[in-house]
Length: 329
Ligand code: GDP
Image (cartoon, rainbow, N blue to C red; front, side):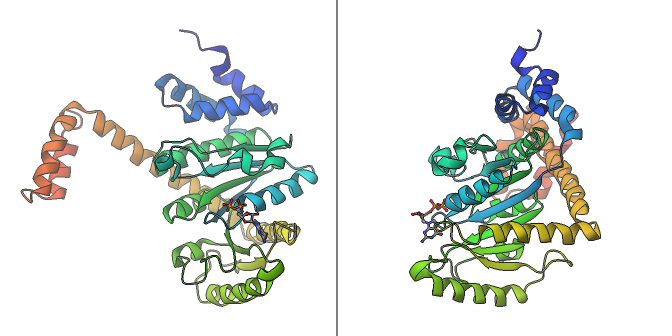
């Protein structure tokens, strides 16, 4: 059967690289699809555009709901599009699995940016597990890069695991906090702090300004006691106000300094290579799991063995070995 015109990978890839936004949206839908034919087309498309990827600055940004993520991203995005840059915002939102809808990357949250012809905002597809969302987001990131976007922002909400996932696919990880929002030092998990290359204290305005200054001092102290992710970069803490549009340009300057520091030593590229290698292993794990669960004998035996393990009649390792042994039979 001939491929539908709008899913022909070669043609779609060419339109996407030429900067056609509808082709980009269609391509992302393709990588999100669970249909086998779409998945094959998506794989061909990704291979075709791979040489055009890698040129964007990949940023991760996280913060609990209410800290001002959408307000901040709107200001930050508009600053960059104002400089003639193209900005993509993608979201990893495992909570959408529960709510059935996405609270991140929602276009109504960033109204001006959503209308900007140099911006592209894509919410998380609902109903997928973190692993699935993460894989599609990474592929969507590659697609936006091939479509000529200069900055890709991957947004996530502070629930722990999704931060680690995002940090594993970006060049720099930004943590957005607000003073007095319960996000004090005790409230924020140490593991998330350790991922941050830049901590931004938003809402540093009006009555909240003194609190914001105090919070910044606390975080600077805390970061000094942690092992930095990169030898050439000490994580920074900066104040910002998305409301008043203050401190936003300074953050872009810091991102530039970070990039220069990591590029000088080769870490920028080394980190990307390491991340790509990690994703290969992740894909292998996911793929093997799929192969395993599609195997008829495994599908038949798995529930029985699960019960047996639960009842203490066999060990998880023995049961796993038995199931793995059924592969290839
Ligand atoms: P999100 O849930 O993290 O995306 O947060 P929002 O961007 O929706 O902002 C949550 C609330 O904080 C809204 O009422 C915003 O108006 C407010 N807000 C966002 N940024 C600032 C800021 O810089 N200063 C102040 N005072 N309020 C802000």
